[in-house]
Length: 321
Image 1 (spheres, rainbow, N blue to C red):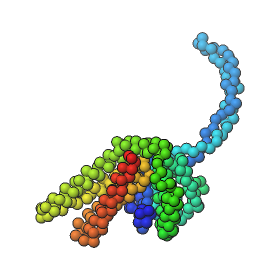
Image 2 (image 1 turned 45 degrees about the horizontal axis):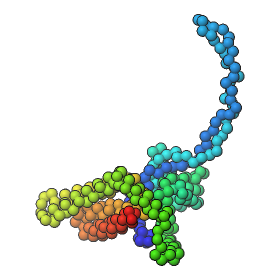
Image 3 (image 1 turned 90 degrees about the vertical axis):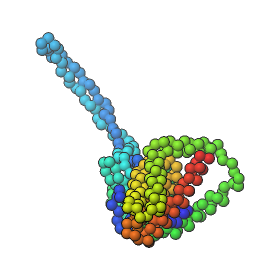
Image 4 (image 1 turned 135 degrees about the vertical axis):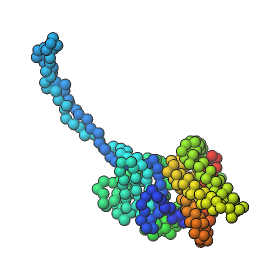
């Protein structure tokens, strides 16, 4: 609920954003899907081979009547035609792939349909004849749905209505929950699978990106302590500025890492990284210009990072049970 009430997106150097446009969600390793047909030839014949003589003692034959038959068109099937990154902003959805780019402008949006089971969303816009389908996987379905709805609410100016609707739905869910109900076997199995998936994520590029952030944050604390102990040292200011840049670079790199397998954790992590990038941007600019207001904004954002990190840590504990 806090995200729905307060989240306003983040800026990104990966896209050329319009004035006032911010990114609400980013998914790497997504696919662009199109319906494609694969046919085959039917009723073909190899024909008849007739001997017509010999050359140098080797027989020569002539084949007649060969035919490939007729081509039978196959049924259209969803096919991944490109891999890339999906961005949801408060104005559009963008797929940025290795071969092509697709854009679905909210102002031209006719409708969209989620397939939570497969983890894909299909968008129909007035300026494109064919719909655009992006696939991100079932583990991110809930997170993608929520961020898209939130971005659309910001575009339409209906955030208050969106929040009230969420509050009503949550209240209805809580009302149906039996008091003190024990978890079912299927819930226990899902929890175990989620913990295993998160452990696998930590051992891969996502965990490496997280370790880089922690290392950069420690470097920043060391640089800040050194400046606090001896503010007149010639390199103390540059050391802090260098530390801010290092944290920002680590957080930006983490934005391109594989998404966390848990949708709630991924949403919190995206918000944390966005706040961290904003924090060090404000702090670096404030320190350079000796601007107290920018430093204050950076400090506020850094407090947000701490709070979100606490929520993310608690989410990790919940996943592990």
